[in-house]
Amino acid sequence: MTTDIGIIGTGSALPDRVVTNAEIAPAAGVDAAWIERKTGIRARRRAAAGQATSNLAAIAADRALLAAGLSPDDVDHVVVATSTPDHPQPATASLVQHLIGARSASAADVNAVCSGFVYALAMAEGLLHARGGGHALVIGADIYSRILDPRDRKTAILFGDGAGAVVLGPVPAGGGVIGTRLRGHGAEHELIGVRAGGSRLPASVRSVLDGEHFFRMDGRGVREFVNGHVPGAITAALREGGVPAGAVDHFVPHQANGVMLRELAGAIDLPNARLHLTVGEFGNTGAASVPITLDAAHRSGALRPGDVVLLAGFGGGMNLGVSLCRWTAPPPRPAARTGKHADALSHR
Image 1 (tube, rainbow, N blue to C red):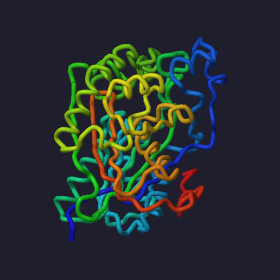
Image 2: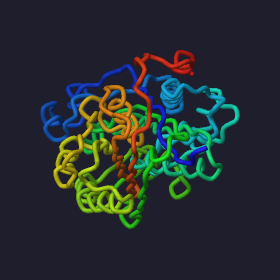
Image 3: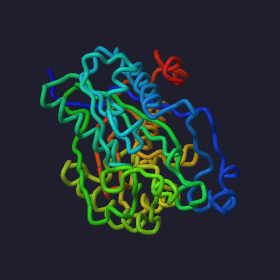
Image 4: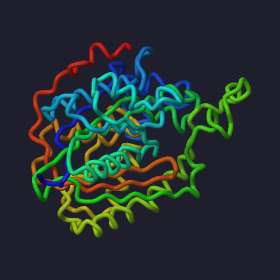
């Protein structure tokens, strides 16, 4: 049995409700055209009142398992990357494991904010290597709409809700994950965050009245961080993986801001890589943005066996994650609106 581990199925889940720029612009004190000009975002999705992060994650997981031709009983590990969990504890992954019926799987969350999916991918790959095989569900899921201040134009205009998932498993020799580079820059942790609700500033009437439970971000500082650190991290990952820049076929970055991503792609020497963007339709979906975009690329037929795919996550912490993969997933099946359990899950 090969010990090479790769992606063998993808899936995603986006809420039905579409929120346009025109809907959110007045509260943020801007106009719709300004939002698109500054961010490249035209719309984003919003979770229904009865949907939690685990619900979207479970639907995405169902679809990824369907694409991989596996059942929940085939899953050994469920790893969920999220910074908007259902609640502080237990882990959202535990709810997902229960909802999809993965009765033999371990379950754990990873919180590396918007780079979380790449971190979770690396951790799940390590678990599978340690046991010499098996299968893992790696899910990125976030519902940022629940922690946004609609008056804050630095955040309210950017974020949407969604989930994306991949199934990791054994692949033919020479395929799958080539290498991953993870780096933390904790000295800059104050650029992004939610101040209240933890052990440092527990929830109270005062913390709620002061708006300390809203997500806040220093947009200029984040852009400087991305421009200053991401190109170098990608160059280092390519060098460590022994992959020439010209051999990269696809670039799937965290969907932070469409304008910023086009600038970033221009600053990175990937001459033959196709840049994949979903930010215009779905906004910034946090840890879900990389797997949602990867699933969209796969289902469009853009990813072919043997293609080299570069995944890059960056965000709160501040954290960076870069993963290189040689594509191994089979051609996508016709997209279904729901997986086996999705109708039952969507309103739990």
